[in-house]
Amino acid sequence: MTDQSSNQMWGGRFAAGPDAIMEAINASIGFDKRMAAQDIAGSRAHAAMLAATGVITDNDAEAIREGLLTVLSEIESGSFQFSTALEDIHMNVEARLKEVIGEPAGRLHTGRSRNDQVATDFKLWVRDQFDAAEKGLLALIKALVDQAEAGADWVMPGFTHLQTAQPVTWGHHMMAYVEMFGRDLSRVRDARARMNESPLGAAALAGTSFPIDRDMTASALGFDRPAANSLDAVSDRDFALEFLSTASICAVHLSRFAEELVIWSSAQFRFVTLSDRFSTGSSIMPQKKNPDAAELIRAKVGRIFGANTALMMVMKGLPLAYSKDMQEDKEQVFDAADNWMLALAAMEGMVKDMTGNRESLAAAAGSGFSTATDLADWMVRVLKVPFRDAHHVTGALVAMAEGRGCDLPDLSLEDMQGVHDGITEDIFTVLGVENSVNSRMSYGGTAPAQVRAQVKRWKEILAG
Ligand code: ARG
Image (cartoon, rainbow, N blue to C red; front, side, top):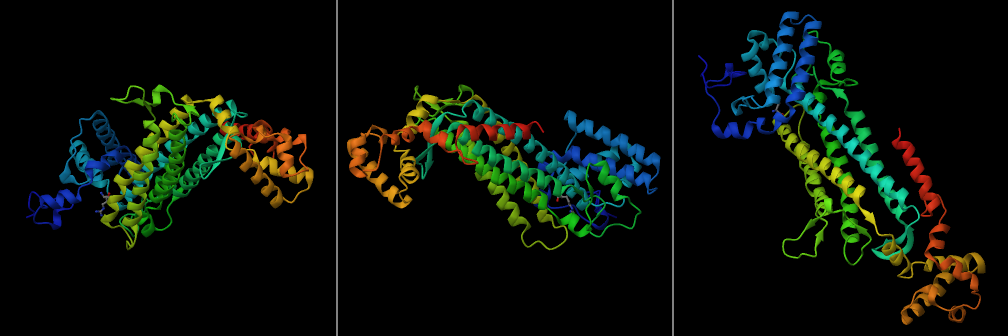
């Protein structure tokens, strides 16, 4: 006789139930209940296929279908009693199905295993998240393109080493992030297309002797095709790793922009004003308006990349096919997905609401000898001086201006001629920041006309 407390799904071989600690380490229901809808969708597709192939009767399939819908509505309404003893979402659903419809429930698991079942459920869940990420990225890109369009010709300092380098335009800076998030978008789409193969029907690891139709379940679940190797199908978690690595790279991009917003919104910079809706106050310093959302977005990369590292390490060295280690995949992905979507939405909200401070940007653009390169380029172009020599002369002029506490355009022609006698009045036409940015018409350069061309290209992409 089997002990009454042993598992009702596989208790036949067992004389005793699990130790409480065994149950605690083994159970995943606490988190995999998030895949309930996917689990039921997978079971419905499987049952319909079993009936179509004559493995179970139409009556049983109909009972299973009705029963699964009942279970789903119980889960959605919150009345479902999840049980840790039943380990995971798969066994919780099946056990409840048995209570609801009785004997036919026992036929659902024909020609399938929890190994292909969990791979299928998890893929469906991750696929939805890729779709959510695509939406979030498109919305963020649109917000950035709108900012770029509004300030296509606003001048601001461009930096290298966070030292003023050359003037750029606000629009150009916004469009740099559009390119980054655009690559994230293309990674999302690539990975989604690559993952869209159905593991269902791979069974435990070797396939099944039942005459199942894997194309039928694949297409019912929106997969492009069934996965071609059953061993691989149950042990593959590349889709989760690609999701996490794509999320990680995107989170790096988000953190870089978040960092810029933190700097730009400071009293020292005043490049941008964040809206009250995306800022917080201080409980002690009444004057403060803190960029908390930007800081938290900057921090999210820590846990997202942490999840990526964690799952890489879980998967490393695992022999084929399924191992229980793989149950550790879900919490990492769930947490990373939640935080990635939140960070995308928060960044979109901040970008939509923020105001670039045109005057502060322009004032900063002209400081720090930002048009020194333009001066050197002018000498090369007009005086045919080799660039290295022009660089040297310009350096001397910068030193002179620095010594006098003024900017390059404030030096007199005589001062300049004292350093290089070929310099003429014409030099002043290139020293203004507007002239500087307008002149950078090379493809992908910062000139407003180039920015507007990129805005137009992206608007067409966004319009589909
Ligand atoms: N809860 C398990 C997981 O998430 C489901 C698969 C269990 N398979 C098994 N053979 N024990 O991975």
